[in-house]
Amino acid sequence: MKFQTKLTKVEKGEETIRGEKLEKLMTENTFAQNIFFLLTGHKPDEKQSKMFEAILSSVIDHGPATASAMNARISASAKNPLHASVAAGLLGLGERHGVVISQAMEFFYNHAEEKDLPGLLKDMKEKKQYVLGYGHKFFSDADPRSVKLFELAKENNIFGQHCEMALAVEKNINEISSKKLPLNADGAIAAILCDMGLKSNIGNGIFIIARVPGLAAQILEEVENDVGIRRLDDSEVEYL
Image 1: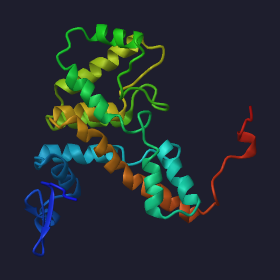
Image 2 (image 1 turned 135 degrees about the vertical axis):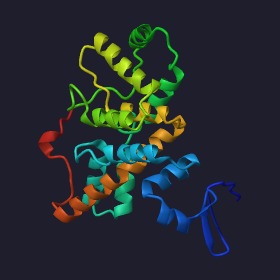
Image 3 (image 1 turned 90 degrees about the horizontal axis):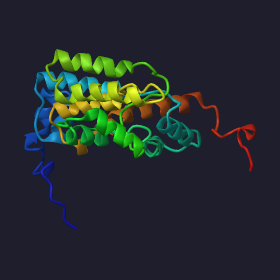
Image 4 (image 1 turned 90 degrees about the vertical axis):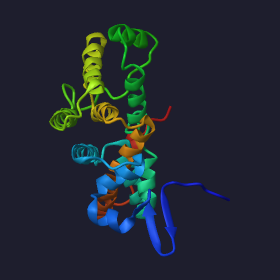
């Protein structure tokens, strides 16, 4: 078995990541900067660093009611170890929760030069195709995370064509939608990452990395509370 890699090299008592000594990265970079470097192959500048730190923090946790957190807590309540419960939580991510940033980025990249955005969105709706990154169960008017992320993007001169497009999509889909669909954090992050020039395949990885600390915290709280194994009450099960 042979692997080819440009990432991490451990040889002769020294470890390097993308050609940089690990000791140097440990002392000169933040954790977020090293994540960015590891994923992209280049180091973020000061403004990109501030933006990337905010992106990671914006989705670090979203409460115990999400599919991923519920999976993690249920697993922990059955006395599975921390790493297994984190894995269970990650398996709760999907297109309806969490891992949609890459797909949203692809949409923004593919339609950045679209001349008839309203027409495109109407056609997509007729075909029951939807732009991911819009709508939220609790944030009906605006997702405060998206608002803050765009504020920071403007402050750091990152807000550009794709962020403008994200807002244009929000405006147009709400003109044809039966319910309010605000730009959510996933959609805002996707647009910002596009304006930062990152590849779309990185997007979902960034969300997964950001959410792991939240899952770990949910699990640790579940273990500390130790209410017993989680299961549905019989009254919550309807037999057909």
